[in-house]
Length: 249
Ligand code: SF4
Image (cartoon, rainbow, N blue to C red; front, side, top):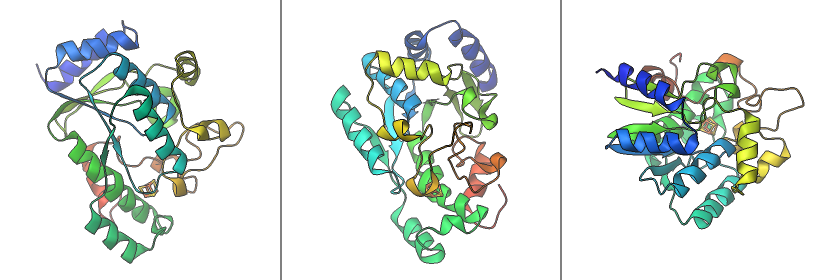
């Protein structure tokens, strides 16, 4: 069976289970390397909680861009202590970071879309590639309701370019579902969520949202809505383009 068919069948089977059952099904069905990339945002905290309680063999990793909020590092430490786990860090290559900052300046991502995508490229996309190398399953905390760009997010999908299946166990959850789960289970979460930040990324590229704005309106707020992704959750050819300044994503 090809990878798209495997993902389609998995998606249908996951739809009939709750979060705990979804994790268990993936673990039963796939014997290879399982990786969860957490941004330490509230959806990811819910998934970390479920994986930790299930004593899952899934590796929990994060992309430490070097530009995260202090509150995000606090959440990282608090989560490790609460669950007795280690969240594995993948950081940018030092030479790429030094070259970028010398060329564009410390906040050079504000200059143009290409400069922003290049920054996300070496700080996020390239480390993600190392984090997922050899993985069979990539767990994410994506939800369809997070933005118009994510409205079609399924429970499982084929990532043909990376040769793996991406599993989004919270794809059909609402934000209220996530908040309720976190509250009911005393899950530690980033203090910024209580200060108007529904979505939290790098500090210089995230602001609080105003009443009535979408959940991801505070991410790269100076850009057009359709361009507001960092390159992690797009097909690999687009992600690769994001690494190279001067190319259109
Ligand atoms: Fe760079 Fe901003 Fe992307 Fe973070 S979110 S990697 S600081 S452009």
